[in-house]
Length: 200
Length: 200
Image (tube, each protein chain N blue to C red):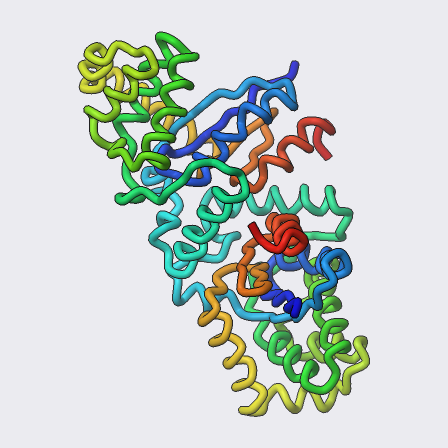
């Protein structure tokens, strides 16, 4: 049976954002379903000793240049947020809380969070902004904001983070399909080829 | 005037090796000349705080898996060397010494060094192996081995390392064409598109 594409990403990751803009087309071209999986790279980095891209000497400069040209190439609206990277804890917890109730709304929420951060410079690490964006996606704002403080909501996200680490996720985007991992925006085409040819 | 493609790489880098296997086709397709530029990533990493890929948790596992599938995809002979990564100091110094005397022989030498390391598991960090490979490329073995000890030979390579850092080279392969940088084997297609369309 053809498996889903697990799409792991960090809401603070420009490459994750660019991948999100292409992932539906990839789903259509391969006939696979996308399972959106936000995670915090900061937690992953504690395990790998890696640093945020934008804060690594030379590599950070390259990345900023690269994001701008990818935006020009793809036509995806992008401006480097005033504060970057940020820890999208509330947005990520919110995603999984919404997903349990309405999977389609969760994806709509995820897209809007990405757009708010990278196209509108919104402070997506602020709970009220997360609530506003959720409301735009048709989610009960008050119910969500109350739930974000619950131990259960926090534990659910922590479990996803543990799952990500167990699966070897170390960057964003990081896709897994039929057990095969593909790291990076620049590997989406390779993943498509892999799926369509049944691997090599 | 159409500029050259500077092709920076580390002889110890599998992605550099895979790029070397495609770089001539890229030159033919774009009409650009390739300027081969070996460098030591270990020196670069001292400036960036990055670690060798194969030694980074999770990311190292991914990379080993990725190298094997790229070899299957491209048909390029590859086995992870018994000792990896290594510091290819002598081979890199040798390259620039040869290049000053015979640029074509230097490229032949570089290809043979890559092949010796990744297809034959040769100890390319040993001076006698470097001498043997140089001889196969038509180079005066005795003259080369004597020159590797010269202060001038060492300084020439150090100058290239400084040049790499000044240009922002932080990984392998790292190509620069008309001032535009492209990092990674998986960006060769993007670089080709960039050249053919005159940028975006």
